[in-house]
Length: 163
Image (cartoon, rainbow, N blue to C red; front, side, top):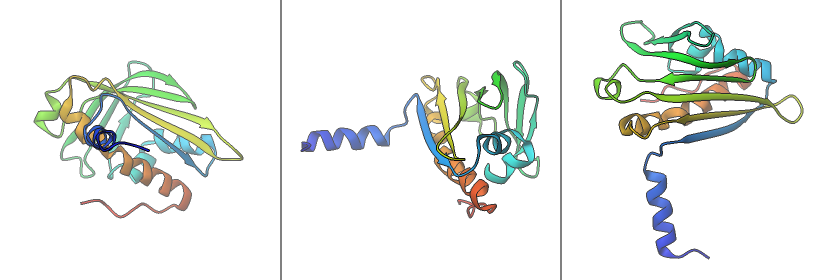
């Protein structure tokens, strides 16, 4: 049994962006399919708001992202770790909004692991958000992006765009 104060503390903590956000999901596809979906620029755009991605996948390489019409650069991030087909880590700073661009860089980690049968466990960790409170609040959008990734891989169709 939980007390009223425990429930209020849980509500407060879930409403506040945290400095480390962890998302775990299981996808009904093999690990290589999932890896290709998160690293091939043409695939990334299918689940990530139509993003146009230029990627140099090597440590020190850049991941440059653009709006679908390339009118606005969304990000210019650096690959920190590259261990295909298991792990990718890169810096994160959103450039499309001046307030977000002014904050310190954070970090995104993708971990891909084979799971039961031919399925995959995908973990996304967005951390180092201590000095980036606006970014921490905005990246809670990972839930929709990851749901869309799963939907695209499993059905071939994207979710309706969020408004």
